[in-house]
Image 1 (cartoon, chains in turn brown, yellow):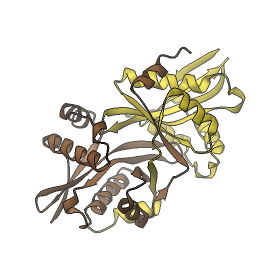
Image 2 (cartoon, rainbow over the protein chains, first blue to last red; image 1 turned 60 degrees about the vertical axis):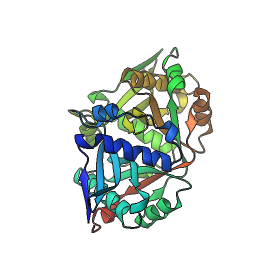
Image 3 (tube, rainbow over the protein chains, first blue to last red; image 1 turned 90 degrees about the vertical axis):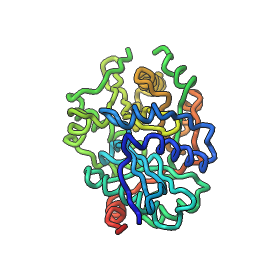
Image 4 (tube, rainbow over the protein chains, first blue to last red; image 1 turned 180 degrees about the horizontal axis):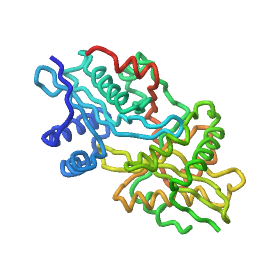
Length: 159
Length: 159
C-alpha cells in the first residue's frame, strides 16, 4: 500500500503544498515564501540543488522527504535531510521510517557514510523515532542563520 | 597584508592540515579521519562537493573557510559554512571576519539570500563575533547525526 517514489517536474505544485504543510506544523508558515517557479528552477533543471521523495499510501499523497549533499571535512560526503513530513492522517503507519530508510539507502548507494538533519526540540514524537535509530544528538552545536540585511552588511564590509 | 584566495588543487595537503588543526581546537581530532586523496577527489574534480578559501597574512597561511550549497525549502538556495578557522597566532587581526565577509560576497553573487553554520556552545569568542553580525541562533533546532552501523541498519529495514 506504501509507494515511495522520486519527485519529478510534475510534482512541483504538490511539493510546494507539502512544504507549506510542514512549515505550518513547525509553526512558522509566515517564513515560508518559496514559489513554484523557484522550486522548478532549483530542483528540476540541469543541476538540481535538491532531490525529493514522495510517499503515497493507497494512491494518496502521504508525505515527503527532501535532501541534498553536504560535506564533512572529518569523514567526507553525506546527505543532509532538510525536510521530512507525514501528513497527520497518515501517521502511525511507518511512513516516516520508510522515508528515512529510503534516504539512507540513497546515501549508501552514493558512498556517503552519514546523514545529518535537525529536529525541533518540542517534536517529541520525531525525537523518539530518531532515538530508536541510534542517532547522535549533537546538542553542543548551535545552529546559526544569517540572512537578508545582515548578510548584505557583512558582504559589504571593507577588508 | 591580508590575502584571501580560493583553495586550488595544490592546497590539498595544506587544507587537510588546517582541517585537522580545527578538529583539534574543537577537541575532536580523533573523529577527523579524512585523507588527502578524499579531499582531492571531492573538492577538485569535475563536480566539486565543496569550495574553500585560504587566508594569508603577509604570505603565511593564517586560516581557511570551507563551504557548499544548501537548500532552504522556505526561501531557496543558501551557502552552508562547514568550517571557519584562524590559527591562534593570527587571531585578533580581523581575519575571521574577512573570511566570513568573503563567503557572504560569494553567497550574494550566487543569488543566495542566506548562510547557515553551527558554532560550539563553549566557543564564546566565535559566538560574540557572530552576534555582532546580527545572526539568528536557531536554538530550538537540535542537530542530528546518523552514521556507520546505525545508518546501515536503517537502510536495510524492510518496508
